[in-house]
Every structure is written in structure tokens, then in C-alpha cells.
Image (cartoon, rainbow, N blue to C red; front, side, top):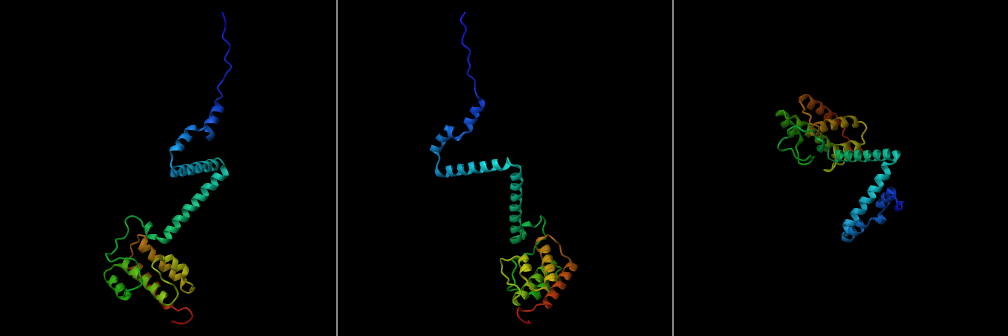
Length: 213
């Protein structure tokens, strides 16, 4: 009986896998490109570059940790910047109820003495603390110690003030205002009185730039 010759052909699976992963042999991709628009091609190119970069980064242990560190630093910087410019966004749930006339903070068009006195008579220490702080800002703006602007944050004025005698109390007053305005702190009369003492001390130190007030 005649025997058939032995088949010596074998399938090189590793070579097949290499070809499948080689973009030069990706014929389906070529057909897909023919139907893609410019935006689709740009998006796919960006995704390929990101995939290659992430693949290279995550396969290197040192680069992996460096990548994680850079991402964390970027996230923290973004959070810090947002908090600095918009601290109210980080106010906790269940914040202190605000009066109906609680609008954006301003130092103009307000009779601070009357408003503070009226708030204290109503035991509305939230409003009393708020106006006490704004009154100090008005005094220091008029004295040329700070330049009040509606887009600035309380922290901006702490760094802007170049008045060594006033800086400690001004920082404490600012922290008290931030606790009440954005920190969900319910001020009582004692808290307001501490704030008022800081404001009185700061008012007594109000000296114009370049001379006496």
C-alpha cells in the first residue's frame, strides 16, 4: 500500500500574532480609513498616541510612579485654584441658612454701622460677622492698604496686606469670616464679639500708605 508523504508544514502562531499587531498588515483598518472623515482620523490618531504613551509609561515602574505623582500634583493644583477663587463650592451639605438679602459681598452702598447693629438686635450673628469683616475691608481699602475688587477672594487680601502690625489680627478675622461664610459654622454672640474685637483693633491701626490717616 502506498503511504502518503508526511506534511511538514507547521503554523507559526507567534509570527501570525506579530503580523496581526503590525499596522502595515491591518487591511481592515485601511478600508475603515477610506470611509473616515478628517475629524475621525484625527481622533483615532490621538487615541493611538495616547495608547502608545500610556503603554510605554505603565510598563516602566519608575515612569509609572512618576506619572502617578505628576497626575496627583496636577489634580491638587486644580482643586487648590478652584478653592482659592470659589471657596463657596466646597461648602458642606446642610450649610447655614442665609438671609434673603444675602447677596454678593461688596463694600459699597452699605451703612455698616446700622447693618451690624440691626443684625445683632435680631441675633443674626451670621450677618453681623459678615458685615464686620466687610467694614474692615472698606476701611483698609480707603486707607490704601488693600485694593478691593469684586473678583478677589478673602485670601487674596491676606497676601496683599503689607502692614506687619495688622497682619495677625487681619488673618484671624479673615479665617473667622471664611468659617461663617463658607464653612457651615453657626456663629453665636461670643463668636461675633471676638470678631468685633479683632475689627476694633484693626480699625485702630488703619494708617494710610505714606502717612497718618
